[in-house]
Length: 277
Image (tube, rainbow, N blue to C red; front, side):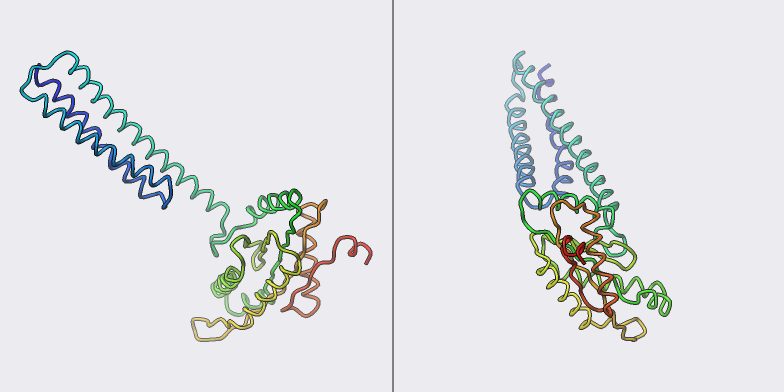
């Protein structure tokens, strides 16, 4: 029976060691931060336990084993099994969370440009209008529509049309603040949600986008230079209006920009003035 206690400890060590790959896999999925640090500490503690298990097993070699030592050895073996089970379950849970997050990202992202899609816009507008009502801070939005995009598709084909969409989206994303959100609203239409921004500030942002588009000529694969322009409508949220009304005012301003000659921005009137007009 003298061999039984060291044998149980060795099994416990093997179980502890088997938990390390799962912990390493979890660390590989975590970014830098307190959670990753905590898992690193746990991995270091397991290594210390391995050293303690080995020292205890060494002390038992060749010596008579008491009932208490057998009980302790059994507990240590069970502890190794517990750590392995928790590590494996944590790994499986992490994989599921990553998979679900990827599915949610795919559902909420436009596959062509990588920005958020219309499905996400509904939730974002609801969130930001609620926050604006509570805080009293301004909230504005831009509706951006490419000029003569159908002509681009008809002349150069849909692959070039996709390239134009990506080009414009990159320019828009390069102009916004970190708190702003870009959404691909339709085929060639984008929406920018700008929290804590008045309509004048949003209009200044939109005009910078127009200027950037005018300056950045797109070079096609055959060497052809293609100039792309956009028209933009800007509106500021007013407490009491729905998200649809808010977006509709920005959309109405966009059509005013189209009627005014395109390649320009138009600011929506406040609701009271719009009704009066």
